[in-house]
Structures are given as C-alpha cells and as structure tokens.
Length: 231
Image 1 (spheres, rainbow, N blue to C red):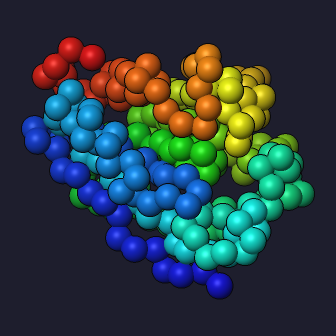
Image 2 (tube, rainbow, N blue to C red; image 1 turned 45 degrees about the vertical axis):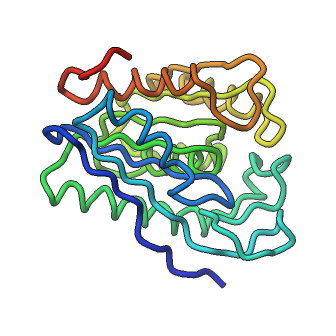
C-alpha cells in the first residue's frame, strides 16, 4: 500500500525568478529535511525558487516493511544497485510524480530547471532527468547511484544528453557505498554524458560544507543572474 504524497515544500525566490531547483530527499526523510539547503543558499542564490517534494509513504523491505517516506522500495542497500533487486515499478511511478512538478514549472513559464537529490532522491533525479523529454539546466546526484543497469540505456532520452551532471559522494559512505556512485559516474561518462564527479574524503552518508559549496557553485552557474553574495 502506498499513500498519496503530500504537497512539496516551496521556497520562493527573493529576487527576480531565473531558475527553479527541485531537490529530492532520501529514504525516510521529507522535503523539510532539506529545507536547510534552501535556507543556507537562499541569500547566495536569490533568484532561485526551491521545490522540496515529499515522497509517498510505502512499505520498505529494508525497514521490516514499515510504512515510511520512500520514492521506491529497497530490499538491501548492498543489493539495491543490482537490476533484479530494484523496485522498477515504484521508481517509474515516482518519475511520473517528479516529471509532473517539472511540467508545472514549464506551464508557469520557467524553463531553467535543475533537478537534484540525495540517496534515493539521487537515484530518482538521475533516472527522471535522463529519461524525460524535457531539457533541464542541470542534474545533481548526491550519495546515490544510477539504477536499472543496462536497461537504463534503452530508457534514456536525448533531451538531456548534453546537460551537465554533478555527482557527489563521500568515500566513507556506509549506506550507499562509494563504489556505486563512482561506477555510476563512470558509466554515464562512458555513455557520453557530461559528468563532474566529486569525491569527499572521510564523508559518510551525509553532506559537508564543501559539498554544499560545490552544489551552490553548480547552481549559480545556471541561474542566469549574478549571485548577491560570494560563493
């Protein structure tokens, strides 16, 4: 059983709206869990509108089938990078949900959209961003992996083949192993995507000040307006 997702957290820009960032939370979290990112970067990126979606509640095998916020089911993080263990149906359902948010922004006249996410949110941001037919300004993946293995290539759209990708991963991540993120970045680069893969020594399954600075710089380059504060 899967519940209907609640409305996303939205933080409007304080300046002239030039870019929308949609950032997806990880397993068991909510959009509010990433409010700190919008609050910290807001003064530096005043023209950015932030959308922090909330996943539906669904039973998660990794958590004893407990009903928790999740973009898709996970049986084990040791196996979640393997195609046969992935909840493809749940993933594709969540892709549709995120794509609906993107289409809503387009209808409101905003075409400069960056999609990103952490952990499960990273998985979904990569899968959504690289399979939808809408060009994006950038894609950010933090502490996650590219799902579905070789099947991804048959699903990929050309719309974002030239879109810059920022993929970040701590090399001491005990949840989503560093090797998954690195392998995903290498695989995407081999397919011809423009990938900037950044490693954070000693970082676990979380973020760091340097990582946030790198994310800020990536976004700022794509806001089409100067930042009001030095990054």
